Image (tube, rainbow, N blue to C red; front, side, top):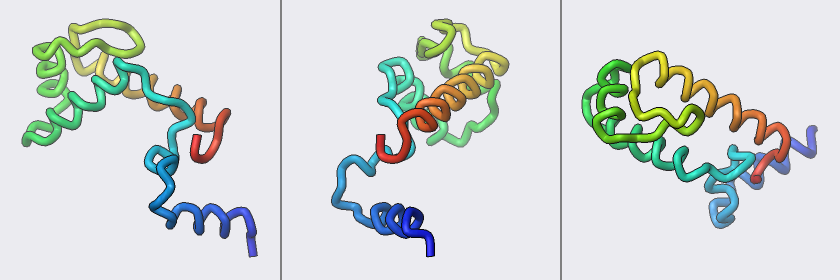
Length: 100
């Protein structure tokens, strides 16, 4: 019996707690990160899932890359930005933990 894991499991099932809506985030997203997420969700709703097409649409929409500040998206930038964002969020989660 692992009391810690049992407690996490129990808390995860409690959908009445607002702080669980973003339980894996160790920090709030920045404005540019939120804009990127919204744009990606919108673009991915269409049947285009090729990085080149996604990058072209990001450029067309003028979405600012959170890490580099660039707006001239290509596949390399898309991969770099997503990798950097993921790394940063992982670090924040490691530092601030569950439910931050």
